[in-house]
Amino acid sequence: MSNELKRKTGININAAGQAEIRFWAPEAESVELKTAKALIPLEKKDFGYWEAESDELKSGGTYHILINGETQIPDPASLSQPEGVHGPSAAVALSEFNWTDQSWKNPALGDYILYELHTGTFSAEGTFEGIIGKLDYLVELGINAIEIMPVAQFPGGRNWGYDGVFPFAVQDSYGGAAGLQQLVDACHEKGLAVVLDVVYNHMGPEGNYFAQAGPYFTDKYGTPWGSAINFDDAWSDGVREYFIENVLMWFRDFHIDGLRLDAVHAIKDFGVKHLLQQISEEVDNLMEATNRRHYLIAECDLNDNKYINPLERQGYGMDAQWIDEFHHALRVTAGEPTTGYYSDFSGIKDLEKSYRDAYIYDGVYSPHRLKTFGGKADGNPGSQFVVFSQNHDQVGNRMLGERTSTLQSYEMQKLMAAAVLCSPFLPMLFMGEEYGETNPFLFFTSHGDKELIEAVRKGRKAEFAAFHAEGEAPDPQSEDTFNQSKLQWGLLQQDGHKELLSFYKTIIALRKKYAPLHNANRKQLTVSSDPQTNCLVLRRWEEEVQVLCLMNFSSKTHGLTIPDDKPSWKKILDSADPQWKGPKAAPVSVDALQKMEIQPQSILIYTNKYA
Image 1 (cartoon, helix red, strand yellow):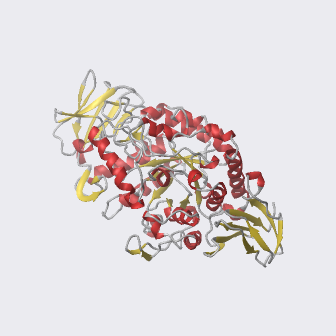
Image 2: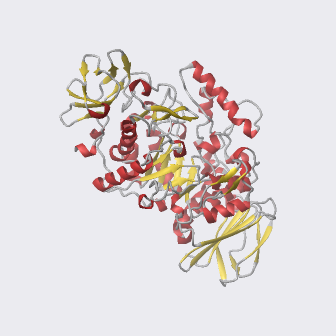
Image 3: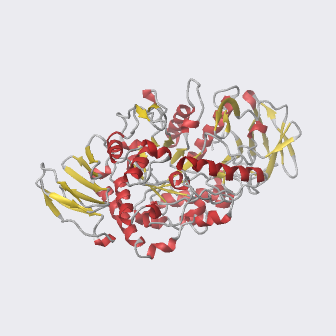
């Protein structure tokens, strides 16, 4: 591996089997690498780095870092923690994996149909191998990209992944580095892209040895997790390089197709060049060197298109972002109470605005925030926005982790799915929604620190105060809480669930088949809504082909008039059809100006060009 295409931090095992060691500790007086049999001194280099080459550490060998002859810690850039977050680090030769995906081409981002999953609860095994066993199912569903919640090593074996403390080490209980490489290779063989969720805005509390290694944190800014990661204070160059190298590793050494960057609005960086800009530049350089395409998807709640504008337009260069506002408007339209952050959303008029403008709060007053909020996204195509009717946050951050299947009627589940899949944005499903999984997705941990366990329990209680939740939150530390969150694959053959799965397969196939549903051109649509009837009409087109989506979110039948500029329309989807356990099918063909009856909580989709 050339010097340009290998990690610049941690341990690389070279072709000769030697360990090339590079450790960042700018304030240390001495640094040594300690194995069971040897103590390897590192030589101080510029900018706070310490380096050495040694035959004493081979792939699979374990080690600690010894600072100033007395502070012994795992390696913050460890690739493996076989004994957990407090144990020794292990050297890994990532280049040993035998890839078979040389012909793989990452699809255009606008073609993505995403499926978010959590490794530990997606399959009975709770491993990468368990995911591999379900890939054929995902392909048959119509998915072409999976999004995996964070896999960086965390305490114990049960965690959402946002408490990771070794960003370079793949969770050992999931299958480690080799297991993830095997999963990505298998996905590419099946035609599936892989997006990985990563966390660069904070570190987890348990097993966090960063401050003992060097100035990874700064007191300049406060965050919900304590001191901010040091991206713009003294010695920040080394911290920035650490996280940039992490990005490059996932793309280069694991063949990951895209990264979802958690809560980038919580990254505190007021330097001339924002960390995200630098990441985008480095990824561009990598893509030029490897001729592989990779995407950067940000989670950002600022409604500021600076994050997703290209570098040449003085943006941060992220390819896309999650957009929670579409979700919030959809949930309120479906009848959920306007408590907590839902209080900013009035329902169907906001959903109409989101279809048209992406951002709902785009420079208007936000009652929840008590200020004018957001900006417009006029120049950003729909392929830059990921939308969903549920995700890990929106399900798991409910006190009881209820999914849509237990909160909404069967008919409304189909309508909400269609509202997402007919949008001009990138659709994302949350694991199990496609067949109406009834198990909750709860918040779970497996910390070892008793004080931390109690603090997490108290924090969960406080979090639900804004939603006026009653009762007790499930204990995050309990193994039962984790087990309750596992998918029930046996539901697939049960009445109601198999029909819902068939509905999802059908509408995903329609999105792929009909250009107006497939394109992400936000300019080629019209949308209107009526708060009195809670109905919405979405019309999309591509050249001569038009698609008309009639949505009724109310509990009553309503009449909607067919537009008059096309002589006739053919039905391509009817969520109220009895084949999907609906109450009544609508006519197959309708004429201009005909008044159509739309069944409660249903969607009708017509086209002028029946394929």
